[in-house]
Image (cartoon, rainbow, N blue to C red):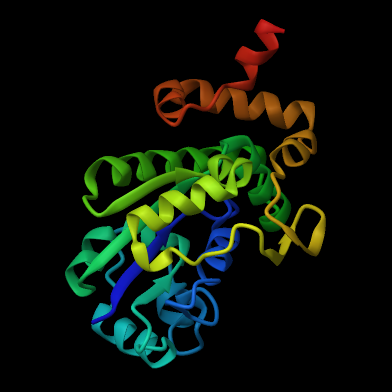
Length: 238
């Protein structure tokens, strides 16, 4: 019997990188894209995707996904970011299920939200904080979950793969040395696992950083729970 593996990761936080890494395993069946964007489901799952009160027809969603997954594989993988606010529904409709909970430095995530979505620094920073709060709750409340950060993945891919294999032995053949074609701040390139945080944060303007610091400073406990630093603190220390 196959098990379900849901990658819970906010947008622009490394989910595609981790998804492609997990897909190097011969034991993993991936959907051709995020499940929310499959043609049969896009109109349903992209209608107010970040409103937790929006009820989704999970039996229908599951039926569609199962037509795309290779169900001869022991691990069925899905990565749509809004899944992170719907873990109770997922647990109800997908069994057995496991989760990988991942976050990224909020400054780096906010840069991606601004660049891709044309968001203001205020909107991007508030969304990043929502993601960190939700993921902190997921990390504390989900039983069958591996918790990691983008930074731990890119700074030591081999160790990250060891942790993933320890969590789910079927992942023992994932390849930390593989190269992946991923769209990033550098455009679409094929390269090994690379930490892009410094480049993304350096792209933020002074005014945008000040706006983010003003918002992030109101949520210091959440940021520190993930062992991230406020850049205003770094400036003071410098």
